[in-house]
Amino acid sequence: MSEITITRNDGQRRGAYHATVEGHPGQAELTYVKEGGGVLAADHTFVPNDLRGQGVAGKLVERLIDDAREGGHRIRPVCSYVVAAFKRHPEWEDLRA
Image (cartoon, rainbow, N blue to C red; front, side, top):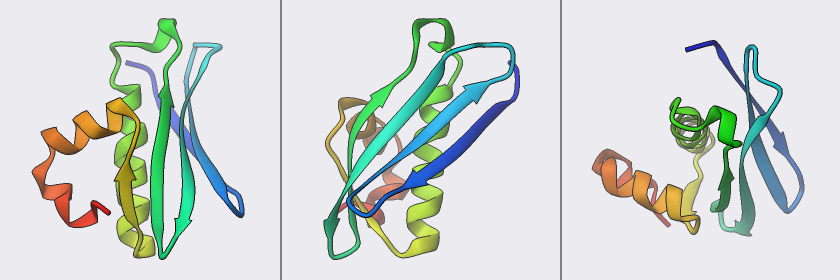
């Protein structure tokens, strides 16, 4: 698989992670809402058809997890993909809001 580049755009109330894959024009994203008290509600994940099946969504969630740990945040999974990812990774349970 080609290199995945992930960027974070952190606004006052909402934020997003965007992933690009070398050689592909599309962009994947994971969005979140800041709910207060350090809680980030992960509310949407989208991966274009040409990037699906390459682990891009998983990389977006992993980046969210890493940043939450580093920043002292907790995550409220709302998006079905993030809910499923938390089920697959019980070691993230300490971050669940």
